[in-house]
Length: 388
Image (cartoon, rainbow, N blue to C red):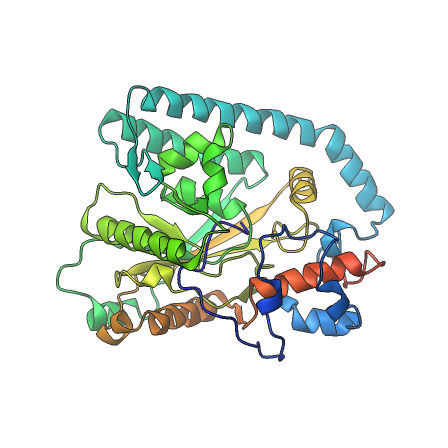
């Protein structure tokens, strides 16, 4: 999700490949809002130029840009039928699953004080039956939630290409286990998949910890909370917490894994943005995981569409498809350990190559510009739709 990650090593922005300085749009305003001071700067861009410049955020499904494209009669009928039948059933069942898991977390954490460290609060380090129940039920119910959302089966494959060579070259003497999972970021659905697969800890906004139901669940996951409006000194503190968590998970099998989306925001699933280095400062091996969502009608990617529209269209789609490509554990060389940026770039290039993703230099700053341009354009179908 948009605010799950923070640039742990924030630096002044540089002009991107197109010569656009991104400093002017570093703020905490929600995406897809019409009020923006940058819309004037991009209002003269043609549709074709926008598609080329912000290709990583372009929606190409039948619903068009921002989910407001003109639908055919067939699509309208399918959507109406799903809204009346499928949508309410899925909403009710999903709410029951969420409430049920919340009650499980509440029972397992009763009379138990969470770990607290610099305003970080989590129950992920509890042991015994409490932790077993939370993890076991969490993984099962997360998969059940994906099933309710239409992901009836998930294609999960592992790449062993050149893995022996890479491990022999960089594998440390004390192997231990990896401390962090590195994944591309396409949708909030990524979180549900990783919960069902390995139940790791995430990086989340501080406000998430105060949300009804979800707040307690995030604490049971052991989420590391960040303040989007915090200063650089605070972000360094978060970086230290994340690095410590990764090292702990690498050395202690009972500690929760960390799960990071180093791109810092979501894309349409065809591109890979530059990686932040926060997840690589621990110098621990990582597990690269690539998530891909195949579709014919609605794309599950959360790129240039509001959250409400995305949930409605997703729940109205009868079947959704997810492909998972799990790469071998990546053991950093000594040079990569000494240079986290090199480490991050090498992992990124490997993921792009194995996942057939396009590398791009744009990031969240350009995404805000693109969303502002979409809001300032009077034509809701400015982007090409993908043929069925």
